[in-house]
Image (tube, rainbow, N blue to C red; front, side, top):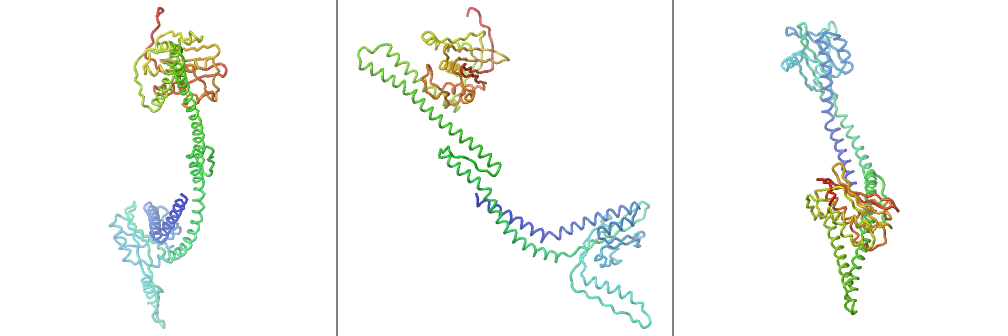
Length: 504
């Protein structure tokens, strides 16, 4: 990347030099001519407007000619004759061209044929100018008398260089019916010497610019590439699962934001890997415990006479059921999170589903003194996957049973409001710290780090609840106060509500 940035900077510098050479060496004259032409056209428009309105004509001509270095000629072109009315010369090189009478008529005809306006660039060599001057001087001395002979005036041009002049001709129709002819000339300064000087200067500028470009490109590419290279090296360490690496490269806002994102990703990956290890350890424990129980009781029944009792067989059946439940929960969770399980929605009675689930806890209520309370006032019907919502209710109740307080009481409430039903499961257990509430739905998270063998279930209940409710676009959450207990709830749309008859 360092070499690429260096190459890009040098290429950019080369492009600037090429553009500079093209504009200064090849496009300078066309740009200068275009600028001059625009200036002459604007001046001609201003003077023409003054002549047409017959307001401050001569003052306007003097001001415009002096400020723009122009030669201005005004003729009365009525009856096809050119009668000079006014001339103002502030452009000496152009004046030296000595516009002849036949040229004035030529410009007039061109302006007439072109709709009243004509612009041209005339080229005259220095020798032509010299010849005109010589003829004029000879005419001036042709009237000499007495001893004075006709003077032989010589004018020698030193070079055969060309001089260009802009000529603008306008035919102006006045309000009184008269016609005026405006002729404006402006010399175009020869640029050949100027261009030669600029090329020599550009040669030195190019040399200095190349040296400075190389120095700046080396510095800039190193300055830009260094933090990115540092971040790249740290990212490679992160890919090797080195979570101690720190993304601290500075220099640019984008790089700093990228480093903050990578630091956050590093923290999350480290936490995920730690929790994943804990999950594997917990699941291994949950799998090993029923297998050990099944193996142990099987060996006892095989080796010891009289141990083949219904109680021992029931223990083996219970542990096998527990093992099957754990495996099924793992499979369900994986399918739910991957989207492999699609919800089969239908309308069913949520209230009846909750009541049916309570039957699974009859043994706990009878033998262990648990108190599970559910007293609905109405039957609520929803449109959802009945099997999956049964899992949601079962896992929330089971979670409350596993973390129940000393009163061994779990309360389930069902309330309907604004077309939605809200189910809450409350326990009076140890509660959850506020800083851990947002993590309890995570697949790998466990609030108490000591693994406990649950009363019923696999320990993956809340992750399954989250996945099912997300699939149904339902709202859910938890409220908890450490030392007082927790309330888990979910809310979904209601299809119908029916009152419960007293004899039910």
